Length: 158
Image (cartoon, rainbow, N blue to C red; front, side):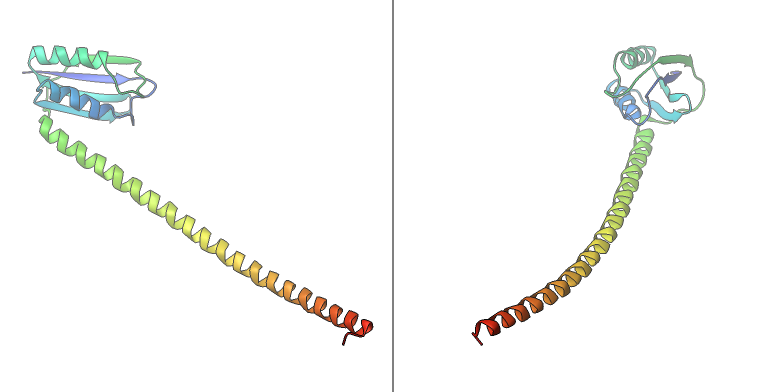
């Protein structure tokens, strides 16, 4: 079994689903040893399999990329060292993706809480304005009623 280290770099190779895409390619070829990680340079892939599997994997990596990825360079070198099973990597990646979903959900809940607090503040201000408006309207209505009484008195209607 031969191992390779593939580094994919470019304008945008992280946060575009590249590792999931690469895992799918490896799975479709029956590759049993696989790992992908975001590194400073881009995405690093460690993969081991038969010569035929690796050749097909590399050609697929060069031919296909996630829709929003911007690839500048794909470097390939031989790799000797431990590579986890594809299944183990799949479990790890699944947990990582679930953690991202949980964190995004928490962030959304925090934003929602802040929005609800602002909504409560606004409702309180509206209630105060309504109270102020009611007082003004009550005062005006009282003046209008007095004015009507005076007019009626002058007309002799009272």
